[in-house]
Length: 264
Image 1 (cartoon, helix red, strand yellow):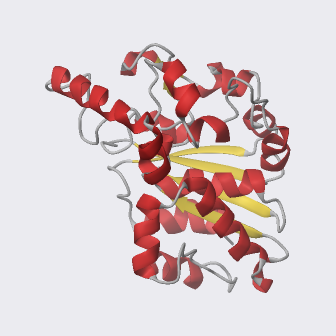
Image 2: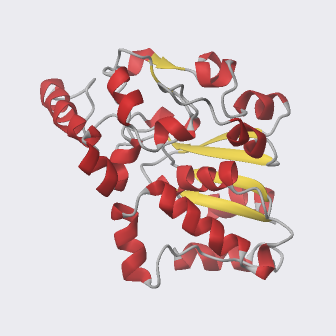
């Protein structure tokens, strides 16, 4: 990330650049990326941003992979100081439902389905509490299980849950941003389905790629649970792609498609 930070700093018109570290050092940051509950990471990031005098007039945010939905959590819960543009690169905004590199529509689908079944252990309370990646696991086949047990991706997307009302401030805060840029990898094999990077996902009851629901046909959009429809109608949603796999993109692409239009 140091290389990317330096590239942004060299091409954003002299604006202040800060790379968020969740912990006191690189080792803690790496560990917390697997172990610290996501809402705690969001709160930690909010405190860093709020206490940084260089960011008090507003800032642009760039999230990579799982950091994309974590920063969206910041936008939805911490509006002060204001986030201006949110750039999400290869994020998992509707969660994941698959073992990285294992395509249920491709080679050895039975093995991939078995791995999915095993990964439903992600909903066990101890796993949800202690493994970050489990908190954005989204089983679209056993959807009721997902609603009952998801600690992050279902709540942050404002899914209706028994005894819990939608959080209207999530929507109120997210629609304040100026641009929400979402980047999907065309040859994605880590984020399954890759369409999750654009908030698109398997239809409830299915885990097949032919049943991916386009964003504008989904309930989260049509009923506007977090403000995506409002942002879209105001031309504030931007959908981009990269031709390669997960987190594979050139410095030239980052400069021309992200830094110059959204970070200067």
